[in-house]
Length: 153
Image 1 (cartoon, rainbow, N blue to C red):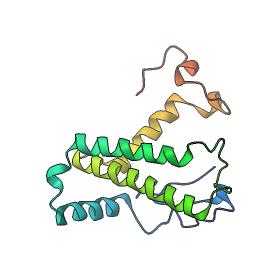
Image 2 (cartoon, rainbow, N blue to C red; image 1 turned 180 degrees about the vertical axis):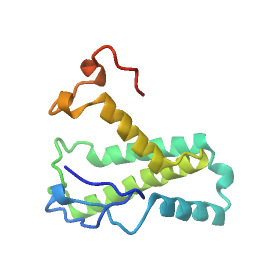
Image 3 (cartoon, rainbow, N blue to C red; image 1 turned 45 degrees about the horizontal axis):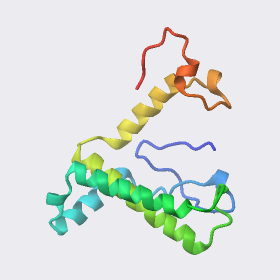
Image 4 (cartoon, helix red, strand yellow; image 1 turned 135 degrees about the horizontal axis):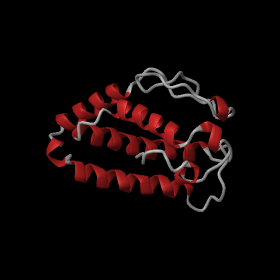
């Protein structure tokens, strides 16, 4: 699936489940906007005192478990989730949203510029996994090293 990323972490809008290869995120929100909305939400409730990096991480891990429950016992799941009910798709969206909210909040509290970190990581992965060597393969990056490359994170 090919998709271009905008510098603000968004892509154009088209959420049609019938064409999963053409899916794109809505383009009217950036990660910074979501970060600010979540920070305001926490501040309005005086929850900053509870939003330590450790607490946020543990909450996020719990939410990842809830995403896993959405897929539990379903066997192989097709792209676009064509066999899922609207209620199941909505529930998955809610659980994925919980994970994203906690991820953004964790990055905020740790002062990590998440969009910049993602772009940096993608570039590191380009170096670890050159398309000319890994196309159609899923081995770990060490299987593709020439022995002279630096250890990449």
